[in-house]
Length: 257
Picture 1 (cartoon, rainbow, N blue to C red):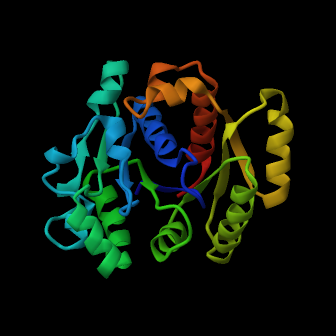
Picture 2 (picture 1 turned 90 degrees about the horizontal axis):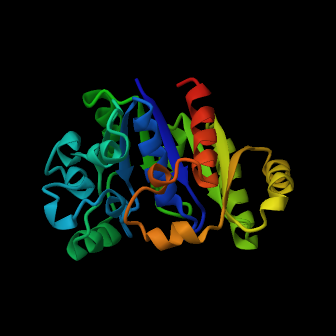
């Protein structure tokens, strides 16, 4: 059985989806079979990073949750974006997007969905596509889906900006994760400003939460300019962001499922 990695942030705008997509691509470049599920059903978007157009979705995660399809039928092979940059890569990358249809999003908001079915789908996705890693891109904040996903995760990766609101909100998620006995938590600091202070920032965050900080990503204009049109780490293998995400992968691969 592969490893389930839940990527979460307490607030939106932390770069969570971008980080999830790039982590998955880097894992695939290392020869792994990798899956992503976009469970940010209220505001989906990770598919854009893989040039997957919503009008081409035959099925999405919503269809699985409404029992219109099997979970693997909602998965799309997006390995081409990895092979485009690394033709010799032997890994595979699969994405289950969430629907962009207004009616589907409204139905979720009004009726909710069976979170237990969602978590069963994670296990089926890993088994049926023989995944080494499954990354879950969560909805920001604290909700039932996030808590249950964290509870069954092998690794919970928390994305944090050096911002007072993020510090306070992340403290809530860390405490809840401890109550859920999450086996392994990692912290990743994103959009940090002064690179001279990165070491001190990393130590301070680790001390505040008692959680290992796997890396610090600088606030970089290059990332913003890309505008979610490609995978930054594949374009810039020597960049500080890529190095930070490779550090995260090093930590993930060392954990025991």
